[in-house]
Amino acid sequence: MKSNRKVLVTGGAGFIGSHTVDALLERGDEVRVYDNLNPQVHGPDAKIPRYLSSEVEFIKGDVRDRDSLKKAVQGMDVIIHDAAEVGVGQSMYSIDQYISVNVQGTGILWDILVNEKHSIEKVLVASSMSLYGEGRFECEEHGQVKPKPRLEEDLLAKKWEMYCPDCGSVLKPTPTDEEKELDCTSVYAQSKKDQEVYSIMIGKAYQLPTVACRYFNCYGPRQSLNNPYTGAAAIFSSSIKNDKPPLIYEDGQQARDLIHVKDLVRGKLLLLDSPESKFDIFNIGTGQPTSILQLAQALIDLSGKNFSPNIIHKFRNGDIRHCFADVSKIEKLGFKPEFSLKKGLEDLSNWVEKEAAESKVDLAHDQLVEKGLVV
Image 1 (cartoon, rainbow, N blue to C red):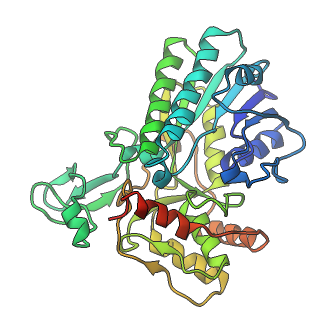
Image 2: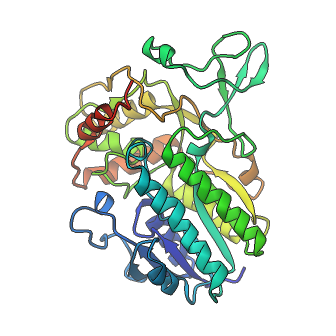
């Protein structure tokens, strides 16, 4: 693809979007940002964040506003579609909002691309590891197996792990590849699956190269410290900054794949530039599992605070036990993360020190309890 492209980044004022914007500008692309400045992310004033480069053309708008989005698409060469409602817990009761923004908003974007004149050459869609549900597992005796969803009776008995459907032994989590059967366990996950399926399907039908990027658990500077439904690293950092022990569901041993935002953006732009990546799906992660307890303790240690995580031994509906990425597919294109977890969390912690943070995790937990979503 040609250099010095004109790139539209929906959700470009947000956490991942803004880092994407920086990387595009650094290499000489022209960038237009389309963002609704959601108050839950950007605060009640909903101002353009100070970190967003003045070099971008900014359009405030909702992805469900067809006329405004149509204007944003005009004159662009590439679209990176990052705009979305994000968060597993909240999606289980803000159902209409998640489906409307993530599915309908993506539908409107594709309706414009199919029915209006434009110069778009490629589309990157932000997908999510959440649509896998549980990751891959293997049994010592039976090899790779597909475990059944965890039963409420097991969760009430504090039996958190996944068990072999044949022999009942505890399963070992293994890297999750793009071919794994999808098993959405939240409205958020299902909405991202719908985004991905529609995008690849329509892109193929109209021969408009389209790539779905399955983001694993991204963290780093600019992740909202005031949104209790954003990623675990930011939620924990906000609690710690406010002298509150991080709240941890289950026993804290659930494993995730934590990737620094700059590495994730590096992977995205590799997929954007690669002629081999079209009408396809790629994991963007590190391939390394980290427990939620390890994450919380590392952030406490970096803060210098003297308390322990608050492990409540309860289950949040929509959560999964283990999932980390098989990254062999994107590695074949040359991707390799540059941030170790230690280096990445130090970067996050240094940024958090300078930021204001209001911890709303107790409010979010109480809302989930009120809705009957905590077992």
